[in-house]
Structures are given as C-alpha cells and as structure tokens.
Image (cartoon, rainbow, N blue to C red; front, side):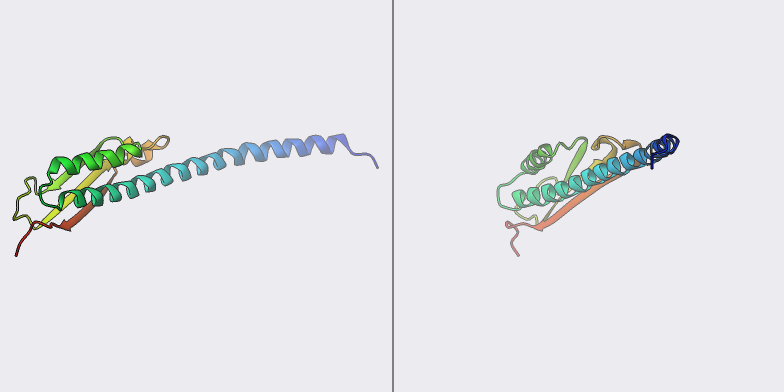
Length: 136
C-alpha cells in the first residue's frame, strides 16, 4: 500500500498549526517561570541581607553604616537594583534595646522580561534583633 501524498501534506499543515498555537504559550510560561523564580530568589536574598545586617550591628561598637554596607554587599552579589535600606534606630547607643533593618525593592527594577506586570509592586524584608549592648 502506497502512502497518500495528500494525507502527508494535510498532516504537515496540522502540525504547523499546532506548533504555531502552542509554541508561544510554551515560551510565555517559560518566561513567567523564569521571572517568578527571579522574584523569589531576590526575596530570599533580601531576607538574608536584612538578617545579616541586623546581626552586624547588634554588637557593641557597630554603626548603621556597617549595616548598610553589609546589605549592599549581599544584594550586589545577586544583581539587585534600586533598593532602599532603613535601619531603626538611626543612632545606636549603649541603651538601644533592638535594632531593625528593613529593605524595600521595586520588583519592576529587578527583573528582566516582564516588568510591566509588576509596576508599582515592591518586595520588603525586615529583621529585628535584640542588641548585645542593652543592659537591664
């Protein structure tokens, strides 16, 4: 039995239509998965940076500048852009009981492909630790 060339032509046309419909959707899902994993990765890095910076300044003699430098060091390794660091209190004394390091970053400034979906949204991370210099 010989193969019918008309049948092969119709089948190739059907495959072309299926690929034309499915491939853009597959690419879209791939790009979204990449972007959401980047946002999750950034969020975890911000958590780590806030906690590490708070640990840096909970010891006697530490300064707010050291906390900001530690946050910069950690977030620069992951390629973070446009973030702000807030340390509370702004002046650390021997009577300071707690230190809090907060980081805020705009999502659209820190992802590559789908920033229009995250306009106006930001990530925040915060760590609050008791200082070692506080005396009851």
